Every structure is written in C-alpha cells, then in structure tokens.
Image (cartoon, rainbow, N blue to C red; front, side, top):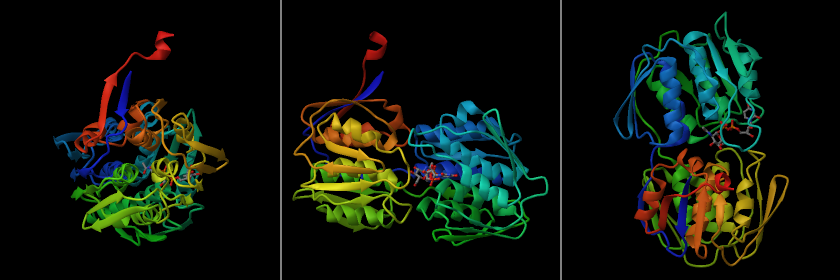
Length: 427
Ligand code: UD1
C-alpha cells in the first residue's frame, strides 16, 4: 500500500501556486452537458475526483481531450445517455452534479445514489425537494434516482432549508431552460457557485444574484452554447498551505487564488497569532509568537469553511490554551481528531463540538487519512511532529490535492511517498 511519510522538523517556506478549485471544476465539467459542442476548461486540477467526473461524462457519450495537464477540451455533442452508473457515482458524491444538467438537456436523468467522503449522511433531499417544486417527478428504486419532467420544468420559488452547495448548483443548472423565473432562496454563496453561474451565463443562461442568498434564473429557450472558461483558484488548497505556514512559522506565499475567498479563515488565522499579507491573487502567512487558542464554528460561505476545519484544528491542537471547534455543516467530520490524538493531541468530541486543549508538540505516528482534508491535516501535523509520521489511505488526499508531495518538497518539507506492505494483509 502507498503511504506518505513525513520527517518532522523541516519547516515549509517559500512560494507555491495552487490549482483550479476542485469543487468548481467538477460542476463546470458537469455543466458542459448543457451546451452541446466543444467547451474548453482551463486551470483544471489534475486530481482523481476530476478523473472520475471525466469517466462519468465519457460514459454519457462525451469526448474529452486533455490538451495539456490543466486543459480539458470536452465535446458533448454526442452525449446521448442520461444514466450515471453506480460504480462511478459510488466513487464520488459530486457525480450527482450531472442531475441538473441532464434534466436540463433531456428532461430526464437516472443517477445512482451517491457515495464519496465518509463525513456524514450527506443526503440529497434538498436537491429532490427543490427540483420537485420545479415540476420534476422522482422515483427511487434499486439504489437509483429516476427523475423525469414530462411537462418540462416550470420556474418557481425554492427556499432551501440549509444553504447547500450541491442543491443550489443542481437547481441553478436544471432551471436554465425552465419556463419563467426560478428563485433560489437561502442559496449557497460559495465562490464556486459564482464561477458556475458565470460560465452558464457565458453559455447563454440568464442567472442573477449568484454569490448572494437569492439567485434568480430566468429560463431561456435557446440551447446553451459552448465556451472557453478558466476555473477559479482553489481557496481550500491555498488555505491548507497557509495553515502549514502557520504551524511551521516561516513565510509561505501562496499564489493563484483570491484572498477574499478565504476572508474569515485569514481573519481567524490572524486572531490565532499568524501574520497574513494579502496581495493580488496571492497571500503570504507566517508566525512569530505562540498559536493563540480561539473558538471556531463552521458555516456556509462566507462563514468558516468546513473544508478548513481539520487543518485549523491541527493548528489549535498546539494552541496556548483551550478552545471549542463547532462543526455545523457535516455531522461526522471529526474523524481526523482521533488520528491526531494518536500523535499526542488533547481533543474531546462532544456531539458536534470538539474541545481542544493545546499541547506543546506532536509525536510522529502511523495514522490513517480519514478523508480528504483530514488527510492533508495529518501530513501538516507531521511537519512539526517529533520523528516520522506515516499517513496511509493516501487516495483520500489525491482526490483533491494535485502533486501534494512534490509541492511540499519544493517548500522544503522532508516528505515522500512510499510503497509499504499492508499490515492487514500480512496478519
Ligand atoms: C460541497 C463541497 C464540499 C464542502 C461542502 C460544504 C463539492 C464537490 N463539495 O459539498 O467540499 O465541504 O460543499 O461547503 O463541491 N444536505 C442535506 N440534504 C441535501 C443536501 C445537503 O441534508 O439535499 C446536508 C449535507 O448532508 C451536509 C450539509 O447539508 O450536512 C451541507 O451539504 P452541501 O452544502 O450540499 O455540501 P456538498 O455540496 O455535498
């Protein structure tokens, strides 16, 4: 099996450029279904989740040329299927992002029930309720969701119970050709939603208000047309490297993203004792004093992102006091804490709160990446741990971080990927 091994005590320092955002690229790829023809996406991260979405599109009939490592040329003129099979959807929950585009293009879709990160129930009831309000009928059988809209979609007002990213995106895409105006109330406001709305508008859609809690989609009759679009920079990859600068202390400059997309994260980092220098499409972080313990609660954007919770917990585990981290977005996203405890952290979980008492240091250990961000945060802990830290289940990290190990090495970390015998197979 493959592991990432980190030798502690070698701080990261220097400059690194992030890729396009995973959470944007996946939805933009799905949206190409709605514009028959050849769409070119640039700044696409070369990560395994993107490969899975590529397989989903190919299964549906699309042709994909990878013209360079970060440029996908997607021809959706021959997309003739509207069914996505379980073996692909099971690999990645975000495959459900094709539901809206397929409904929009064919008026029907069959999507297997999702899999993905093991971070809670991750239901899709809000997608379904919202689409039903637009006139879509649903039947669920044998693990598949069958969606049909025999009379076409009709604009309506949909009030989401929670500002769900996936539900907002599916509703936005499905309603592009709906009859009349669709209003999505309590919509998610993430920068990736804005990126998707921008591309759909470039393709001929009429979407207003993306980035605010009320999105209005005016249905258009004409078919959308293909475009060339650049994926927005990955704020979470950027935040991960900045958190690493915070734990190690030396300055790291992260390029290729918008610091305003990390607004609250950077503010909290400053309160925790990090220095942050915001620039145009880049940001530098470092730390001179101790890490100050402060409370954090995750919320939909512009709140503190759940995707930065593990990396921030890693910092706070070395804080100068005690604090509470409250996870409001996913109910099961503290699995990282138990792995960090194996490295000496003092964390107690009570429901959706983690009570973190700062310890002076971590000790290197064998740990398992519990999910994507938790995996990255364990490597981060290894940077400052005593001795070697070996992180297994690295496929979680590869879902969302391109060239993670080479990028860390370029910053001076002593980190490598190794093939080691699987102890479970040996016993
Ligand atoms: C997206 C991101 C993920 C990020 C999350 C929150 C992608 C590929 N993934 O996930 O990295 O952590 O936003 O910022 O873009 N929920 C329901 N019913 C629904 C939909 C959601 O109960 O119909 C719940 C989920 O279980 C979760 C919460 O709402 O507890 C937030 O989910 P959502 O915002 O939809 O996240 P995703 O789109 O899955």
